[in-house]
Image (cartoon, rainbow, N blue to C red; front, side):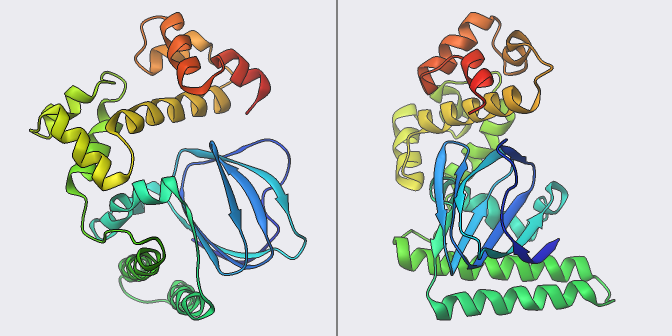
Amino acid sequence: MILDGIKGTLRGEDPLFASDYVICITHKGQTDIMYSDLRVHTEQYTIGVYYPNHYFREISKTDDNLKTLIIVNEETLDDNFLQIIQQLRYRYEQQPTVKLSKHEYKVIVNIVSGMIETSSIDIIDKHKLMVRQLEFLLRILSYYRHRKFNENNTDKRVSINFYNNLTEHFREHRDVDFYAELASLTSKHFSKVIKQETGQSAAYWIHSHVVKEAKMLLHIRPDLSVQAVANMLGFDEQAAFSRYFRRETGISPTEFREKDY
């Protein structure tokens, strides 16, 4: 789904939980938001790529905001042509935005205009064509991002598999050794490869994923007790979950929920 000509940004003071993959193109104006624990600034010619299961909170914005949003649901994300989305996840979750030149911005806008035109006409296999156009957009954006951030464009096979394994097993396994064994590597070598490919350690990504899921549940499920959230995340006792959460965030789950970070 493409929402073109969006004025303004988030409304209200409460964080907004996003369950879809979103590409945000800023045509005019400036915005500052919290993207989970990361402060993000956008301005003219900025492209933001935001992954599911994060929450957003608006900090400030100018009155002249004008954006285009490309919203991709979970079912579309599973398309084989969009594997690039998972390949780029570590990059975008660390740094979700990139400021383009005027020329680069126009190239992206032209691709999006083609996607909008495709979505408006009756054509065979329209969904497949839209997916391929989206893949093309992401590859061009990745090329621009590579030039600005000097990122390696090669596929990150170990970290991609690590991410897939992490999302499947994080409730039962929060130790690096488990994921190293799945990768058929020693823990030392596995940790070194993950650090090289993503810029962060394997332990960082494990703890970050657990905390992200915890915050999501604490925020969107006020009907659940902290004990219930702990159980859903694989902690046998609330006390163990609370210690883990405090160690990683500096506050308790109850404090996080009460202050609605």
